[in-house]
Image 1 (tube, helix red, strand yellow):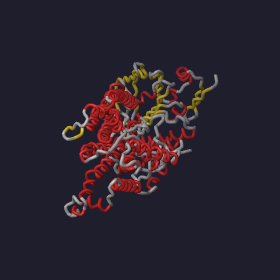
Image 2: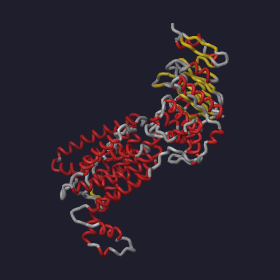
Image 3: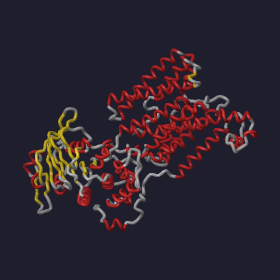
Image 4: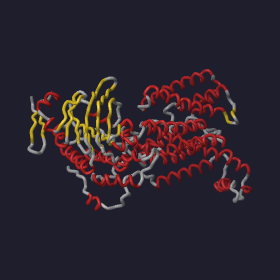
Length: 257
Length: 366
């Protein structure tokens, strides 16, 4: 019920095309990662799905065109985790995560006991219950990222859009965040569409990859199909070695020219 | 670092009330009580202070006298009753309305524009009110409309016109996508109105003293007419802002995050700005452009109590009202029998106090 279908989607900024005639289908419960060099249009696609930028073409979520949904209904269907979430200083983790319940409230509505129960459960699942009363500006980088994921999960939306979830995290925290998202995806049958910069991690956690170059889709498939040395070399201009790790995924390692 | 999802069994074992969620902002009862006490205390000081000594007992009897089951009216000196009911009570009540409104409007503007320096006059309300009042003082002194002095009416119309102009200009340029466009439109309109006001002042020098006296703010002519004039607008303004406390907190997130939560920034901005402007225009019409209240009161509360608008809005009403009543009392007693403009007092008392609060809470985010 939470598949995402993009048909002939184009997005432009001030007359400059950023995404061109894109067709893409993401099955319910699937994790699809958008990869590609800088400026390929990965973030723009996520923003178009979340209706944050105007687009041409059709985007359908669970059978409903996003253009026909009210803002609140759209937010009930899609949660977005932006690349650098704004964490208001002085706001507590609980208050921040509770804002995720906004799509379920009326314009001037107040959170019900059900909303508080949902948030409490999300905090517990993400091991944030001990930090509920802590101010966001007093969290570590990893804790902030978990708080942002918690807020997105509190929305209760079946589709999760994630923009570069591991930026500025060390390798351990990158792994933790992606493991967490993957675990939640399986538990809650979430459909995940992520813009990923780190190719090895994208290949290891995603069901499929979509390689974009200058707003066009140039390859889709599993990590083994997309992450090949000729493909990466051709589209990233990078010298890499792709190593098959015997059932543990694919590693993309840059080598010195 | 490994963070996993806790299994359901662990979740059940975690215990605790399922709806008791720690870390949510609540109005601290001690601060709410302190605000009520401060307001009552300042009102009492405001009523008791004056050239004619009137005791607290007399004040209490005068307040109870209109009630049918208290037959105390005859025990009060008619002169004292007249001073209280005609001069001091309306002045204190007006001070409460003006102070509470300016403080809460300042907090609201800071919220919708995400700008800590925003004040109730950001979109040109002060410039519009000043121009309206200047035109009325210069060209129609002493005129009344339906028994109401034309100066506050002209100020109200001027303030509303300036903000409406700024809003229309901001909308035509940026479509209200950015708060910056609206703020710049407010600056442009205010500058334009100020230039007209300066021209009128220069050409009508006989009224310049009255104009400055009005601009610097005063509650000297306060009467029940003024109270009744502003009360509906103030009540509506404060009620609407009060109802938007949760949404003002949501506006502290990034623009994309707010939108992806299904919240319309434009709608909130429009409603809150209209409400805050309505209240500001009403109180500026009767009190002049009293500076500083809309900035120092909300920020002091943020520094001392917390940043959530669920806390800032109600406490701003209480402490803003108390502060202005106190400032007005100081304005009419420091150089008695003359009176200082209240804007001088609010800045003189407010600036050092705010500096002390800032220094004592060093490192706290504004």
